[in-house]
Amino acid sequence: GIEVRLVQPGATSGINLPLNPIDPISPTAFQNGVRYQGQLSATTNPPLTAGTYNVVFGFASNQASGTAPIVLIVNGQPTLSSPGATPNPQSAAGDVTFGVTYSDPNGDLPVRNGVSTIQLLIDGVPFTSVKPTTAGTDYKQGVLYSWKVPANTLVDATHPVGTVRTYQFTAKDDLEDAVVPFVPVTPGNFVIN
Image (cartoon, rainbow, N blue to C red):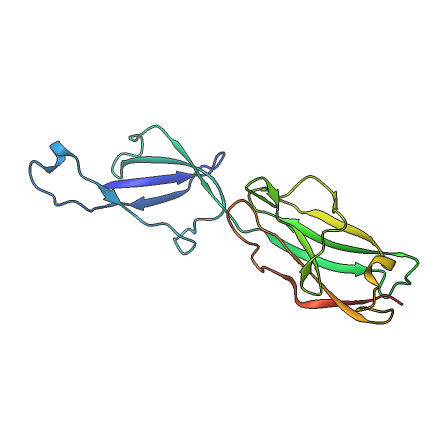
């Protein structure tokens, strides 16, 4: 039979998936070409995980046979972790630093269509007055995004000193939203005294 073989660069083995014909088979069908199909997913054994694969189509009975490899990139969803606001509470004379770690199994930045997607939300609204700074460059391991906000800019007539406010973070890579779209799941609280 026909199969597709997927191997990650540097690996000695991978996924061999038998393919099934989707066109009628007859004595002359192969002269005109027969289409085959197979399905891979996170539940394939072994599972298809995020990463880069070399893909070869060939005969199951002859592992040396096959097409020239083509590259398949399987996207993985980014993850947001370790959300926080420090110090908390803070005086109106100081700064509050909001931070979250962004990681992506493919090493993708939090960018879609050329626009940064990582956001700090204050009381459910994107906070755009301060741009984040980053610590680190390895997006597979995680990069810390921090927003250093003058606390007095978070106090106004609607939110006087002592008001409990909320914060969350959200991000996307070039194809998918973060595994948990908003962190913390229940918005975190902070107070300006």
